[in-house]
Each structure stands twice: as structure tokens, then as C-alpha cells.
Image 1 (cartoon, rainbow, N blue to C red):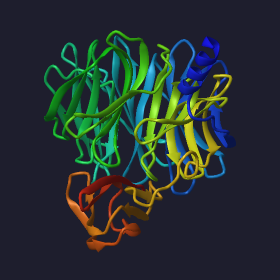
Image 2 (tube, one colour):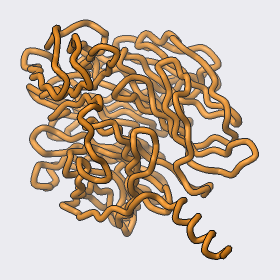
Image 3 (cartoon, helix red, strand yellow):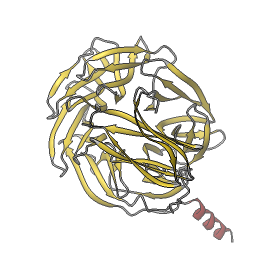
Length: 453
């Protein structure tokens, strides 16, 4: 009897299902004698990709590669020729150029800011040397509304603190805003729908939740408690406002596990739950909140697998394993997901396209639910904004730029319950990040729109 009860309990603790995935294609590069990995990538409208990461032997070099729609390698670049060089991110800017930012070592000191602007063919357009400066690395950058960029990173004085940098469309620096203590380091970050940087700073028994605007002003600072031994925090802006937080930690009196929390704009907890199996080595590498319906796609190490799809409330729908190590989720459609990561032998940095019916697995679509999405996204020059509302109501659909300025009102009037679509044409706009905001009765949400020209 005890054996039967233990067996039944184990079934209750298992994830809901295991997904069967097929590999559509892989695209990658390898260097003899190096371990290589892609840690991020951008999907373009033409079907191609720009990927970045590192190759490592004794030290690391930053790598960037451009692939066309058929998977052929158009060009590769190795950046940095000293000791350890790391790409934080790559951002498209004006005139088909790419800003590559991260961290590089320089003679006599460590951790200077890596700052290189590449042309569309991978050649260097410009490069700034910060070897004698106190700017010691970039952790994130986003396109700005003028086709330039906004960067956040660390500077030394003499300890580490945060800076926010404005970058012109040609890659030159407009301004650098340095933050005071105690804002020293972001473990992870995202950009909110108001254009603020939202960061998570892990401390031993709490998580520091911070919002910083593009002028370097701290808009919100608070501590979230309830965990201990916090590691690997990730934070993502949620489609319907607020944020999603993931971390590995130990609840007081418990064991280590992966936790997922849904937060409001001000950092208040809506819900929080364990989504792992009490393994201290578990780590979520990346999160994608699916624009179709708000479900949560994870990659990393969870439930003994490296992929998981969760319900909007954190319930596990399925887990899966692939013969690759995914590090970042690049893009997702109802039929396919593209990951950046590392190949089975660890020698190849690769992109992997998996066939996966995200629109059908483990979910019955309820007509009364609320949804907001856009496709294609990124887009050029137009995208379709899809909206499902649960009841007839006065509805406003408006597009704003990253500075919060209204770009276009797509609808302002009564909509019937059900699905609706609106075309947004960015043909006359500059490349950059935009936001579609919807209010419908008591419901509301915001969708990121990335225009890449």
C-alpha cells in the first residue's frame, strides 16, 4: 500500500507531459580548439539571423555571425585580441549597422567597455577604446526612437556602479549618466513599456528591484523578500503589464528550487510558485512570454530537461530535451521556435529551429480570454496587431515610441466581443522599439513592436 501511495504521489509531482520536437534546421560556426556558444540572436524579416556569443580556449573571444534565410554564413567576426572578451548584446542602428557592446580586457586593467559598430557586411564602421576610462562593461542595450540606442552598463569609482548611455544613430556617444550608490550591478534587466530599464539585483536574502529611466534617474527601488541564497535572477516585461521574475533560491526552511513570480509595475507580487524539482543546479537561461496567449516558454535546466512550456499561472504543460544546450530564445511562431546556444560537442555555436505546435499543445482556446499579440515582430514596414477581448467594450488601440510619445491611434471606439486585427504601418518611421497599448473596459495590455529597416 505504501509503495502504491508513493507511486501515485510521484505521478502527481511529474510535469504534465513530454513534448516531441523535430529539428527543422541548425545553423552554426565552430573554431578548431575552442568551445563556442551563441548567447543571443536577432531574427530579420528576410529570414536571416544575426547571432553573437563567444569562443573559449584559455581565454574568450567575442564572436558575431550573420546568416541568410537558407542558413548560409554571410560573414563572421571575432572581436577582441587580448584576453577575455564578451558580447553583452548587439543592437541594429541606422543605415543597416550594428552596435556590438560588452566587456573586453585591456593591457594593465580588466573589464573595459567593448564598443564596436559594424557595417551590414561585418566590416568595422567605428570602434571606441575605453581602456583608460572607468566604463568597464555593457550589460544591455536597446534601440531608441531615433534609430540610435540606449545602453546600460557598469563603471568603476573605484567599485562597480551603473551607467546609462545615450547613443546617436551613427554610433557616437551622446551622454553618459552615472548612477549613485547603492545601484552597483544588474544581474538581469529588461525595458519596460514606459521606456525605463528594469533590473534585478540578487542579494543573499532578498532581490533588489530597480527601475531607471533613460536619463539615469532611479524611478523605483524596493526589496523583494521570501527567498534565501538567491542566484541567476531573470526579469522580463509581461505582455499585459508588470513583469515576470525567475530565480534559483531557497525558501526559508526549504530546499533550493527554481521560482517564478508575476509582479506588478511597482514590484508587488501577484503570484509566486516553484517550477522546478528541488535541484540546486537548476537554472533558467531565458524566458519568452508567448504573444499568442501569454503562456511562458523556458529554456535552461529544469525538471531534468532543457525546455518547458508553462501556463500563464506557472502550471507546467510539458517539458522536453533536445541534443543542444539552449541559451536564448530568439523567436517563436505557432509552429516553430528558434534557440541560440551550443551544439552537442560544445565546439559549435549554433541556432536551432524546432518544429513545435505552440498554438495547440496542452491548451483549449477559450473565446472569453484576453489576448494581445503582433505578427510579424520584428517587422518591416508593417505588422498586424491581433486583439481578443472577452466582452463588448469601448476600446482604444494606440502606438507609442520608446519615449512615450503617441505615434498613431489605430482604433478608438466600441468593439464587439471576440477577435480583431489592426494593421500598423511603420514605413515612414525610423527603426526602433515601439509599443502598442490597448485599453478595453477593465482590461488592458501592451505589446512590444520592433521595427527593423
